[in-house]
Image 1 (cartoon, rainbow, N blue to C red):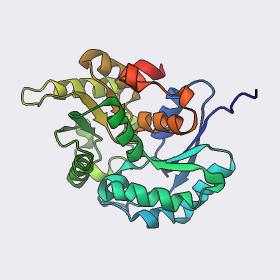
Image 2: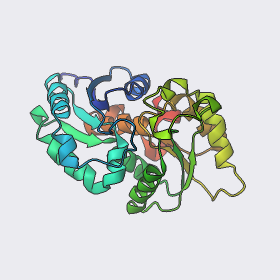
Image 3: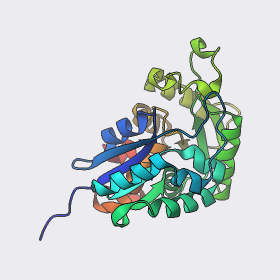
Image 4: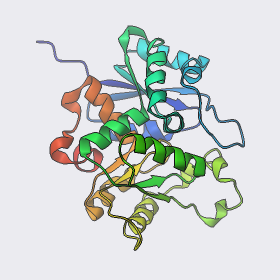
Length: 269
């Protein structure tokens, strides 16, 4: 009997985001490869991002090109690593984007979004009351959109904290911090410290997990220490993208969350 081909995961990433491929490569089980195509971020320069129509994003020339190239190189699945578009558009965005993008992917390659993967991860781990850890470049409209997206999944009891950059970033509009390179400066130790503080805040509600929904927020190094200290699952966007892609294409390589209760910290290692 011929052994199945190693899983090949494709990801679509905005033009200046190095984080998803870096983290997913590090988490990927032996033999699993990750392949990236880039598209121009739909956020106009020096503005807050407030969403994109699903069909318009799926039909953008560089997205179409990326879908075609990733499918032709042999990717078994392709993920859109741009959760903000889903949060603003709601689950209906995911459905519409997956349908429209699937028409551009050759050979019947499965397309999904980071938000779809996060949804599956939340449902599989039984999370109900997460601490939302927002990247420092997210703004209040994205906070509300994310909470509304989760509420549509039945997760309406959340606590939200935003990662704080150092004082050297005070003069830069929050929504420009990513483009100015803030993602290169984030230390996993600082992520761990800020999340633990928020989780144990005197006014924090009863929490059963940590959710980090930003694909471009470097947080992988904090996952295992957080799970060990807090004793709850920690779910990140990039971790969910990898796990869900493996569920679609190579379930024998994916962790069994029914017994592990975790995606990365206790299983992908």
